[in-house]
Length: 317
Image (cartoon, rainbow, N blue to C red; front, top):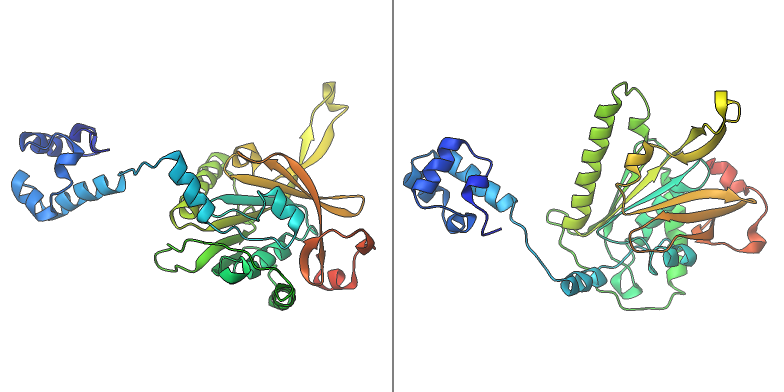
Protein backbone atom coordinates (compact mmCIF):
# COMPACT_ATOMS: atom_id res chain seq x y z
CA UNK A 1 0.00 0.00 0.00
CA UNK A 2 2.85 2.41 0.84
CA UNK A 3 4.24 2.15 -2.70
CA UNK A 4 0.95 3.16 -4.29
CA UNK A 5 1.32 6.22 -6.47
CA UNK A 6 -0.52 9.42 -5.62
CA UNK A 7 -1.64 9.57 -9.25
CA UNK A 8 -3.78 6.46 -8.66
CA UNK A 9 -5.86 8.05 -5.88
CA UNK A 10 -9.47 9.05 -6.52
CA UNK A 11 -8.77 12.81 -6.58
CA UNK A 12 -9.38 15.72 -8.88
CA UNK A 13 -6.62 16.09 -11.51
CA UNK A 14 -5.68 19.53 -10.17
CA UNK A 15 -5.26 18.13 -6.64
CA UNK A 16 -3.07 15.26 -7.87
CA UNK A 17 -0.92 17.75 -9.76
CA UNK A 18 -0.48 19.90 -6.63
CA UNK A 19 0.56 16.86 -4.61
CA UNK A 20 3.13 15.77 -7.18
CA UNK A 21 4.59 19.26 -7.54
CA UNK A 22 4.98 19.43 -3.74
CA UNK A 23 7.00 16.20 -3.81
CA UNK A 24 4.29 13.73 -2.75
CA UNK A 25 4.78 10.87 -5.21
CA UNK A 26 3.53 7.87 -3.20
CA UNK A 27 1.04 7.24 -0.39
CA UNK A 28 3.96 6.67 1.99
CA UNK A 29 4.99 10.32 1.53
CA UNK A 30 1.62 11.39 2.97
CA UNK A 31 1.34 9.02 5.93
CA UNK A 32 3.06 11.28 8.50
CA UNK A 33 1.37 14.47 7.30
CA UNK A 34 -1.45 16.19 9.19
CA UNK A 35 -4.43 17.79 7.42
CA UNK A 36 -3.33 21.30 8.43
CA UNK A 37 0.24 20.75 7.18
CA UNK A 38 -1.00 19.31 3.90
CA UNK A 39 -3.49 22.13 3.30
CA UNK A 40 -0.79 24.77 3.79
CA UNK A 41 1.83 23.00 1.71
CA UNK A 42 -0.21 22.46 -1.45
CA UNK A 43 -2.74 25.29 -1.01
CA UNK A 44 -6.02 23.44 -0.46
CA UNK A 45 -8.70 23.68 2.23
CA UNK A 46 -8.46 21.75 5.48
CA UNK A 47 -11.49 19.67 4.50
CA UNK A 48 -9.90 18.67 1.18
CA UNK A 49 -6.69 17.69 2.96
CA UNK A 50 -8.67 15.68 5.51
CA UNK A 51 -10.53 13.84 2.73
CA UNK A 52 -7.23 12.89 1.06
CA UNK A 53 -5.77 11.47 4.27
CA UNK A 54 -9.01 9.65 5.14
CA UNK A 55 -9.00 8.00 1.72
CA UNK A 56 -5.46 6.76 2.33
CA UNK A 57 -6.39 5.42 5.76
CA UNK A 58 -9.55 3.75 4.46
CA UNK A 59 -7.70 1.95 1.69
CA UNK A 60 -4.82 0.87 3.88
CA UNK A 61 -4.45 -2.91 3.79
CA UNK A 62 -2.63 -4.84 6.50
CA UNK A 63 -1.07 -8.08 5.37
CA UNK A 64 -0.56 -11.07 7.66
CA UNK A 65 0.93 -14.50 7.13
CA UNK A 66 -1.17 -17.66 6.77
CA UNK A 67 0.16 -18.82 10.14
CA UNK A 68 -1.02 -15.62 11.84
CA UNK A 69 -4.44 -15.94 10.20
CA UNK A 70 -4.75 -19.52 11.45
CA UNK A 71 -3.74 -18.53 14.99
CA UNK A 72 -6.28 -15.70 15.01
CA UNK A 73 -9.05 -18.02 13.83
CA UNK A 74 -8.23 -20.61 16.50
CA UNK A 75 -8.56 -17.98 19.23
CA UNK A 76 -12.17 -17.31 18.23
CA UNK A 77 -14.75 -19.33 20.13
CA UNK A 78 -17.52 -20.74 17.86
CA UNK A 79 -21.12 -20.77 19.06
CA UNK A 80 -22.56 -24.19 19.81
CA UNK A 81 -25.94 -25.17 18.37
CA UNK A 82 -26.52 -27.57 21.33
CA UNK A 83 -26.58 -30.38 18.76
CA UNK A 84 -23.22 -32.14 18.78
CA UNK A 85 -23.76 -33.64 15.32
CA UNK A 86 -24.47 -30.21 13.84
CA UNK A 87 -21.49 -28.69 15.66
CA UNK A 88 -19.24 -31.38 14.19
CA UNK A 89 -20.64 -30.73 10.73
CA UNK A 90 -19.74 -27.04 11.12
CA UNK A 91 -16.14 -27.74 12.00
CA UNK A 92 -16.29 -29.35 15.41
CA UNK A 93 -17.44 -26.61 17.77
CA UNK A 94 -20.41 -24.86 16.19
CA UNK A 95 -21.19 -21.76 14.15
CA UNK A 96 -17.89 -20.06 13.26
CA UNK A 97 -17.00 -16.50 14.27
CA UNK A 98 -16.02 -14.03 11.55
CA UNK A 99 -18.14 -15.69 8.88
CA UNK A 100 -21.68 -15.70 7.49
CA UNK A 101 -23.62 -18.93 8.05
CA UNK A 102 -26.97 -19.41 6.30
CA UNK A 103 -29.65 -21.90 7.32
CA UNK A 104 -32.34 -22.55 4.70
CA UNK A 105 -35.53 -24.45 5.31
CA UNK A 106 -39.27 -24.65 4.84
CA UNK A 107 -41.67 -23.56 7.62
CA UNK A 108 -41.65 -26.00 10.54
CA UNK A 109 -37.96 -26.88 10.40
CA UNK A 110 -37.22 -24.89 13.56
CA UNK A 111 -35.16 -22.07 12.04
CA UNK A 112 -36.38 -19.45 14.52
CA UNK A 113 -35.82 -21.76 17.49
CA UNK A 114 -32.31 -22.51 16.24
CA UNK A 115 -31.72 -18.75 16.20
CA UNK A 116 -33.00 -18.51 19.78
CA UNK A 117 -30.73 -21.38 20.83
CA UNK A 118 -27.70 -19.64 19.34
CA UNK A 119 -28.64 -16.38 21.07
CA UNK A 120 -28.73 -18.24 24.38
CA UNK A 121 -25.52 -20.19 23.78
CA UNK A 122 -23.49 -17.14 22.81
CA UNK A 123 -23.95 -15.96 26.42
CA UNK A 124 -22.37 -19.09 27.93
CA UNK A 125 -19.36 -18.06 30.11
CA UNK A 126 -15.82 -18.66 28.91
CA UNK A 127 -15.08 -21.11 31.73
CA UNK A 128 -17.89 -23.27 30.32
CA UNK A 129 -16.51 -23.15 26.77
CA UNK A 130 -18.73 -20.29 25.63
CA UNK A 131 -18.02 -16.94 23.97
CA UNK A 132 -19.55 -15.05 26.93
CA UNK A 133 -21.02 -12.50 24.56
CA UNK A 134 -24.32 -10.94 23.58
CA UNK A 135 -26.60 -11.32 20.56
CA UNK A 136 -28.69 -9.15 18.28
CA UNK A 137 -31.79 -10.89 16.91
CA UNK A 138 -33.38 -9.08 13.93
CA UNK A 139 -36.91 -10.45 13.55
CA UNK A 140 -38.22 -9.49 10.10
CA UNK A 141 -41.24 -11.82 10.16
CA UNK A 142 -42.61 -11.34 13.68
CA UNK A 143 -41.96 -14.97 14.64
CA UNK A 144 -39.81 -14.40 17.72
CA UNK A 145 -41.59 -15.63 20.87
CA UNK A 146 -40.03 -14.38 24.10
CA UNK A 147 -41.66 -17.13 26.18
CA UNK A 148 -40.08 -19.83 24.02
CA UNK A 149 -36.67 -18.12 24.21
CA UNK A 150 -36.96 -18.10 28.02
CA UNK A 151 -37.74 -21.84 28.04
CA UNK A 152 -34.67 -22.58 25.91
CA UNK A 153 -32.54 -20.42 28.20
CA UNK A 154 -33.72 -22.24 31.35
CA UNK A 155 -33.08 -25.63 29.77
CA UNK A 156 -29.60 -24.54 28.66
CA UNK A 157 -28.70 -23.38 32.17
CA UNK A 158 -29.80 -26.74 33.54
CA UNK A 159 -27.77 -28.58 30.90
CA UNK A 160 -24.64 -26.51 31.61
CA UNK A 161 -24.55 -27.70 35.20
CA UNK A 162 -23.92 -31.20 33.84
CA UNK A 163 -21.37 -30.19 31.16
CA UNK A 164 -17.62 -30.60 31.26
CA UNK A 165 -15.36 -27.53 31.21
CA UNK A 166 -12.87 -26.96 28.40
CA UNK A 167 -10.64 -24.03 27.55
CA UNK A 168 -11.66 -21.28 25.12
CA UNK A 169 -9.96 -17.97 24.41
CA UNK A 170 -12.33 -15.73 22.43
CA UNK A 171 -11.35 -12.26 21.23
CA UNK A 172 -13.50 -9.24 22.09
CA UNK A 173 -12.78 -6.33 19.75
CA UNK A 174 -16.16 -4.92 18.80
CA UNK A 175 -15.69 -1.18 19.24
CA UNK A 176 -18.99 0.17 20.51
CA UNK A 177 -20.51 -3.06 21.85
CA UNK A 178 -17.57 -5.35 22.57
CA UNK A 179 -19.76 -8.13 23.99
CA UNK A 180 -21.84 -8.63 20.84
CA UNK A 181 -20.65 -11.88 19.25
CA UNK A 182 -23.72 -12.86 17.22
CA UNK A 183 -26.11 -11.19 14.78
CA UNK A 184 -29.16 -13.23 13.70
CA UNK A 185 -31.47 -12.16 10.86
CA UNK A 186 -34.72 -14.13 10.66
CA UNK A 187 -35.31 -14.09 7.78
CA UNK A 188 -33.07 -12.48 5.17
CA UNK A 189 -35.54 -13.21 2.38
CA UNK A 190 -38.69 -11.64 3.82
CA UNK A 191 -38.25 -8.10 2.45
CA UNK A 192 -36.80 -9.21 -0.88
CA UNK A 193 -39.48 -11.64 -2.03
CA UNK A 194 -42.25 -9.10 -2.52
CA UNK A 195 -42.81 -5.86 -4.42
CA UNK A 196 -39.57 -5.99 -6.39
CA UNK A 197 -40.29 -5.32 -10.04
CA UNK A 198 -36.68 -4.35 -10.74
CA UNK A 199 -34.78 -7.60 -10.22
CA UNK A 200 -31.47 -5.97 -11.12
CA UNK A 201 -31.96 -3.53 -8.25
CA UNK A 202 -32.80 -6.40 -5.91
CA UNK A 203 -29.59 -8.20 -6.89
CA UNK A 204 -27.49 -5.09 -6.30
CA UNK A 205 -29.07 -4.54 -2.88
CA UNK A 206 -28.54 -8.17 -1.88
CA UNK A 207 -24.91 -8.14 -3.02
CA UNK A 208 -24.25 -4.91 -1.15
CA UNK A 209 -25.92 -6.28 1.98
CA UNK A 210 -23.85 -9.47 1.81
CA UNK A 211 -20.62 -7.49 1.44
CA UNK A 212 -21.50 -5.31 4.43
CA UNK A 213 -22.40 -8.31 6.59
CA UNK A 214 -19.21 -10.13 5.64
CA UNK A 215 -17.08 -7.07 6.43
CA UNK A 216 -19.01 -6.64 9.67
CA UNK A 217 -18.35 -10.26 10.72
CA UNK A 218 -14.63 -10.09 9.97
CA UNK A 219 -13.93 -6.60 11.31
CA UNK A 220 -15.65 -7.10 14.66
CA UNK A 221 -15.07 -10.84 15.06
CA UNK A 222 -18.66 -11.98 15.40
CA UNK A 223 -20.88 -14.58 13.77
CA UNK A 224 -23.60 -13.56 11.33
CA UNK A 225 -26.38 -16.15 11.03
CA UNK A 226 -29.01 -15.75 8.33
CA UNK A 227 -32.20 -17.76 8.01
CA UNK A 228 -33.58 -18.14 4.52
CA UNK A 229 -36.84 -19.48 3.18
CA UNK A 230 -37.38 -22.06 0.44
CA UNK A 231 -39.06 -21.48 -2.88
CA UNK A 232 -40.31 -23.69 -5.71
CA UNK A 233 -38.15 -23.94 -8.82
CA UNK A 234 -39.56 -25.50 -11.97
CA UNK A 235 -37.14 -27.62 -13.98
CA UNK A 236 -38.01 -28.01 -17.64
CA UNK A 237 -36.96 -31.49 -18.66
CA UNK A 238 -39.05 -32.18 -21.76
CA UNK A 239 -40.35 -30.58 -24.94
CA UNK A 240 -43.42 -28.37 -24.61
CA UNK A 241 -43.02 -28.50 -20.82
CA UNK A 242 -44.77 -31.86 -20.72
CA UNK A 243 -42.33 -33.35 -18.19
CA UNK A 244 -41.69 -30.39 -15.95
CA UNK A 245 -40.51 -31.08 -12.43
CA UNK A 246 -40.55 -28.88 -9.35
CA UNK A 247 -38.01 -28.74 -6.55
CA UNK A 248 -37.66 -26.75 -3.34
CA UNK A 249 -34.56 -24.55 -3.41
CA UNK A 250 -33.32 -21.71 -1.17
CA UNK A 251 -34.92 -18.36 -1.94
CA UNK A 252 -33.22 -15.27 -3.43
CA UNK A 253 -31.67 -16.99 -6.44
CA UNK A 254 -28.41 -18.67 -7.36
CA UNK A 255 -26.22 -15.55 -7.11
CA UNK A 256 -27.18 -15.12 -3.45
CA UNK A 257 -26.06 -18.68 -2.78
CA UNK A 258 -22.44 -17.64 -3.35
CA UNK A 259 -22.50 -14.81 -0.80
CA UNK A 260 -22.45 -16.80 2.46
CA UNK A 261 -19.46 -18.75 3.75
CA UNK A 262 -21.47 -21.79 4.85
CA UNK A 263 -24.94 -22.84 3.71
CA UNK A 264 -27.00 -25.49 5.49
CA UNK A 265 -30.33 -26.78 4.16
CA UNK A 266 -32.85 -28.08 6.71
CA UNK A 267 -35.45 -30.62 5.59
CA UNK A 268 -37.58 -33.59 6.65
CA UNK A 269 -36.71 -37.20 5.77
CA UNK A 270 -39.00 -39.93 7.07
CA UNK A 271 -40.28 -37.57 9.78
CA UNK A 272 -36.72 -36.89 10.95
CA UNK A 273 -35.20 -33.40 10.82
CA UNK A 274 -32.05 -33.32 8.69
CA UNK A 275 -29.38 -30.64 8.26
CA UNK A 276 -27.22 -30.84 5.14
CA UNK A 277 -24.10 -28.73 4.64
CA UNK A 278 -24.30 -27.96 0.92
CA UNK A 279 -21.70 -25.18 0.61
CA UNK A 280 -18.47 -24.49 2.45
CA UNK A 281 -14.96 -23.49 1.35
CA UNK A 282 -13.28 -25.79 3.88
CA UNK A 283 -15.78 -28.36 5.16
CA UNK A 284 -16.99 -31.59 3.58
CA UNK A 285 -20.62 -31.88 2.47
CA UNK A 286 -22.38 -33.75 5.26
CA UNK A 287 -25.89 -34.57 6.43
CA UNK A 288 -26.79 -34.98 10.10
CA UNK A 289 -29.98 -35.48 12.10
CA UNK A 290 -31.24 -33.15 14.78
CA UNK A 291 -34.35 -32.64 16.82
CA UNK A 292 -36.15 -29.80 18.53
CA UNK A 293 -37.85 -30.61 21.80
CA UNK A 294 -39.09 -28.64 24.76
CA UNK A 295 -35.48 -27.86 25.74
CA UNK A 296 -34.48 -26.46 22.35
CA UNK A 297 -32.18 -27.82 19.66
CA UNK A 298 -30.67 -31.20 20.53
CA UNK A 299 -29.10 -34.32 18.99
CA UNK A 300 -31.58 -36.69 17.39
CA UNK A 301 -32.79 -39.56 19.58
CA UNK A 302 -34.58 -42.44 17.83
CA UNK A 303 -37.06 -42.93 20.65
CA UNK A 304 -38.22 -39.31 20.38
CA UNK A 305 -39.98 -39.82 17.03
CA UNK A 306 -43.73 -39.54 17.44
CA UNK A 307 -44.98 -36.89 15.05
CA UNK A 308 -45.45 -33.37 16.34
CA UNK A 309 -45.38 -32.90 20.07
CA UNK A 310 -48.01 -30.88 21.83
CA UNK A 311 -45.53 -28.13 22.60
CA UNK A 312 -44.68 -27.96 18.86
CA UNK A 313 -48.33 -27.48 18.06
CA UNK A 314 -48.56 -24.83 20.79
CA UNK A 315 -45.83 -22.74 19.11
CA UNK A 316 -46.92 -23.73 15.57
CA UNK A 317 -43.42 -24.66 14.37
